[in-house]
Length: 443
Image (cartoon, rainbow, N blue to C red):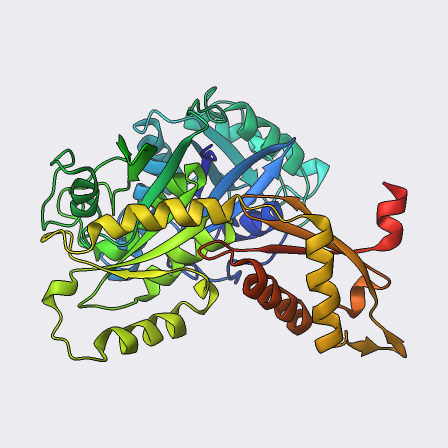
């Protein structure tokens, strides 16, 4: 299931990042009373009335500007609008409608996307009359809000959720099909890898970044197992875009990751792990997807007997949160080691769905506690009564304890390592939940 994408746009300094943070309930975007602070799109998941979505915070849109950074921000905002299912257009209720707002509104009408008009900085009842002038923008009923004071956000989110596509939460896929998202920066060889895996040129391949315009679902069967490959675009091509294409590779990956069981994180062997790779891989990790790291173009690297070892160490260092993900070195062009990919996908999908018997789990837990006793704090020692597996995809374990606050993250990491040593779980993240015993008794 792919989460709907909500882009928050508007001219500089109208409160977009403040609204973004309030909806997400955490401070992610930098908020400062200065235009241009948010210079890159930032992503965060939100939820309202049981419906989940992904928000994109954009830099301010300057319609007429020769400033290079502001011009780049405008390009980013345009891309976010193209990829969004719903657009929230934020304007300043204190300043009133400006010529720049009218220009942005004209741009938005051209997208043919649902637009929710949010009039920000409406902090008092006597300011509510100010929202009526924004009807002139021709974008429907304005919603008066105060992002700083969290006023009117319920009405705003009601309008946003009501604008979601009707099919945003439904996707019929056979249960025995492993859905695989092929993600990574533009021009790392994602489409070439898809073609090599299925054995035919079903996806257009070019060395021009951005050739793949949309996510393409490709079905094939190997050794009796059905797969669905989701090849994601690095960006949607726009004529004469001056920005480096690496900035545009995340939005397409978001949808693919949300729909996938297993993620193939493709890295260019010649360039190594980049900051953009970390962003894309980090989203897959936080989404709880199984992962295989694919180092493509390995045939172009000069090698000695220790090259792959050094490369793996560098990957583990740069992508420390993906220690559990297996790494495969291949060449999609020559098809060297490509068959290994489907083997690993099938294996990590099984690990992603693995269940452990409660009795066996607690025996491992008992041994772990004997080796390394739980920590103490405030004169108390943490006591772990028992654990149980609550879910799969990813495997989720609940530990019932006397005082959840005493569970230090380092001890939780120790328990995770013991679970991996005992059961494997290669290629999948683990979710560990700590609850006081009374919470179970109250349930």
